[in-house]
View (cartoon, rainbow, N blue to C red):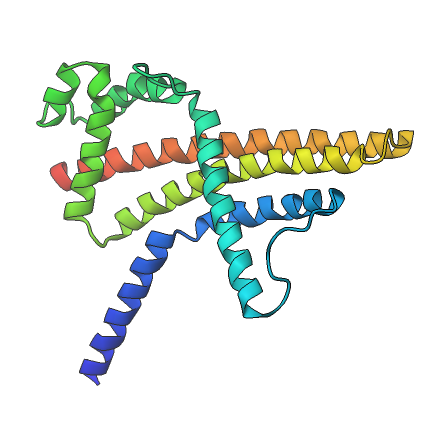
Length: 231
């Protein structure tokens, strides 16, 4: 029985590693974006090149939703973090490098190595220190509840970034549906504009939640390192 339990545990661990690599959180935003894309294709009388029946159709839709989720995540993260310019930090990274040293000091780690050396080199190395802390947590706390919580925060931030982009796709689809065939009646126009306003609010809320989870992640990361070093 022990051998069977060990074999089953090994299979479950490998399955968990597979889902970690796949990161099914992208399916949430991908599914939310795929629905309005299907609506746009229907309005344009150009059906998507996806089989419409059988297991092949299910597999194709899953892959399409996953790829849509990746694109939504990349787009949402890029917009929220700021437009990248070569040789310069983006907006959110600059904010991070300005606030992360204070977070390290608040946990009493600024007098220890390697924190002291990183902080002495200025704000530009705060991002490198953040990466170093992630490496330390992975090496010392794998697996652990703290690492699982950190990963959950990352997943939630990625999900909300993707949902913010998916809300924009919905805005485009609703606008296309609303004005498809000309100017709609006044009642339909008012309802459509209300929906568009709601979608704008959803996009902003998702972006705010993504930022909040990233702050939680940074706080939890530094607190975890402080517990490891200082008890």
